[in-house]
Image (cartoon, rainbow, N blue to C red):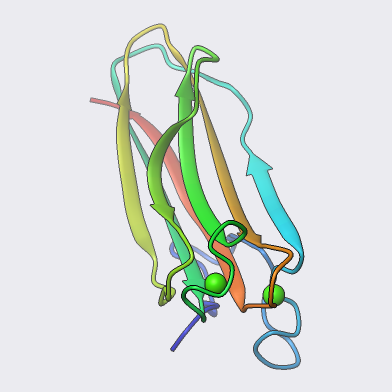
Length: 136
Ligand SMILES: [Ca+2]
Ligand SMILES: [Ca+2]
């Protein structure tokens, strides 16, 4: 299986938990949550919001409360809404598109979170690339 992808979804740069150097599991997520939160974007036309993500997790059921992934969006500073999520499941890493929409005059913010909890160590990784907010 694949938990870490080797390159970007688009172009040559992406946001990774870490690129693998030294073998699988050398630099993956350990003992807690990694979070990346975007700036707040002002939307001035009704828009399509798109983000490409991957999540890789080796073991299912080893830490049900501690292992997870969420890609979330919020509008006008409100509650975070899930665009994609995984629990403590086996997950093969592959670039996947998540989409939502934003209305004229809203603000949009994106957040990606993944965790290898305090229980038995798992191989957990994630990435984000090619976030776009485009007028419809
Ligand atoms: Ca780990
Ligand atoms: Ca797990």
